[in-house]
Image 1 (spheres, one colour):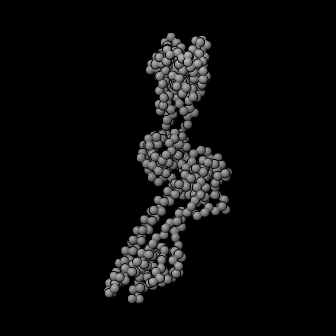
Image 2 (tube, helix red, strand yellow):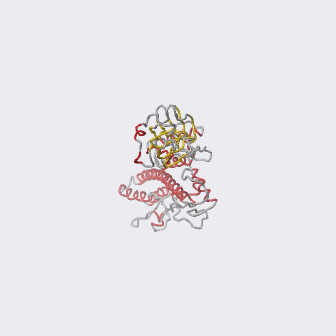
Image 3 (tube, helix red, strand yellow):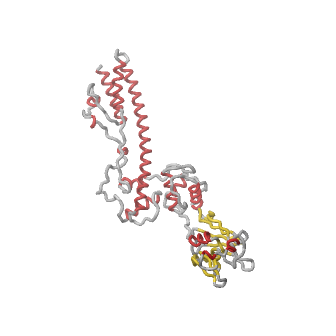
Length: 407
């Protein structure tokens, strides 16, 4: 029996050494912990854990000089900002001042790191469980062999095997609290040395923190007009294609490894950001005004279609491409024709966008005939619009915007 006990202890010592787990003693039996040389207190029976199991320090040490937080300034803050921008956690300038944008960037980075840590912890946990199962099966086989010739073999084996199960209880990974928006040494080292730019291919239908990071970087580099929501939709697809086109990659709209390695680096080509968000076109034959918005590299998104009145054949609206002069009057008086119009914006020279015509500077004096003429050539060269459309042009189309007039 003594030999059997020693054999059991040997099995358990191998199991404990291989897996590194907590030993809990049963005081009603010969204790495995004391037999293997451990102390009697269950709370103290912890074999040294893998340091990687701790996600963060429980407290941020105020003596660490590289703990960065709101209100701080300097080169280290600028370094942090550049890292946050490079990896898609922050937009804006790296100005060395820890403000609201930087704080938001740090929170984004912390959230992302927590996700990665959870995934890695889950992998380690699965690996540990598999080790435990394999070690337990081996221990059980050995116990069966030891008790094969004993009258009370079944009960004794089950009792001793229960100690194997207790001994093989895995550590719970300790998730320490972090200060949201404060960059501690752990996060800074992660961004400087351990950050992995590519973890998975992203495409239409993908969602989550990786998509949000992708969108943030595309937005910061002028490829995505907005919509940072963590969902890979059509705008993100077009933005990825636009990025691939300007950076010499195959235009697939899929953010594969090659695409992300360039995007999350300092070698990417930043897209041109237009000075003017819109381009205006006027079709004489259709008596329509079209407003196009800058969209993934060109003025290609039609955002407004308006019915207009252009000049007659005797007093035509000039054809060509012009740089508009911008707003020139909430109310505008045409002295030559003794009439008024609202929301005038200069196209070129004396040619304006403006509303339908009034006899006086008073909305009650509207000339209904000019409303009825919308959609036909009836002006002296200007482009008349409804009051609503004239106001939209007045408030949204800046001086310098391109206006193309064609037949």
